[in-house]
Length: 177
Image (cartoon, rainbow, N blue to C red; front, side):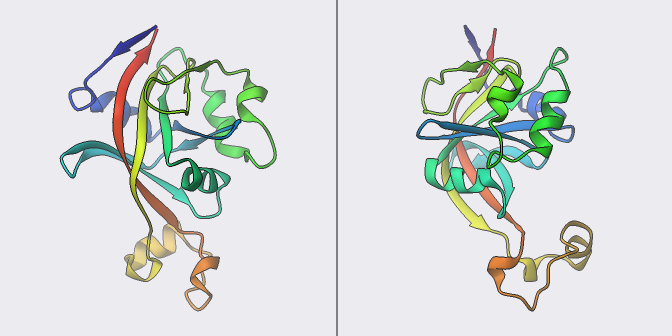
């Protein structure tokens, strides 16, 4: 069962948890992968409510996002086992099935193919509208040094592990109950 919410009126429920970690989940064919993210925001772009997520170029999730074109955001509540976030933030979907490992309960989405996760009940169903890799050379020096200290600007851009920004329309927002 789902209780639909107005995400713009309730954006604080997502943003207040973001710095501690929330899950971004995507699905390609029968493979579902989830990862912990700590960067993102909710806003309005092109007159649509959007979630903006940032995923490093090297992540397995990025490959899946580019193919799927959609994702769910799964936000923990006070009852959520925090070890879920720790596990999903330290394991790669290339090497393990995190959903299966943690025995997470998948909940079918209403508008996209990617499911929500019952254990992280606040769910946003998101359809990617636009994505773009961040340009290392345009970042402030302080960001280059603190966030990307191992990037060599002399190397080919494809070797730089910067983030891709995904702007996705929030198709639906609800709490799984």
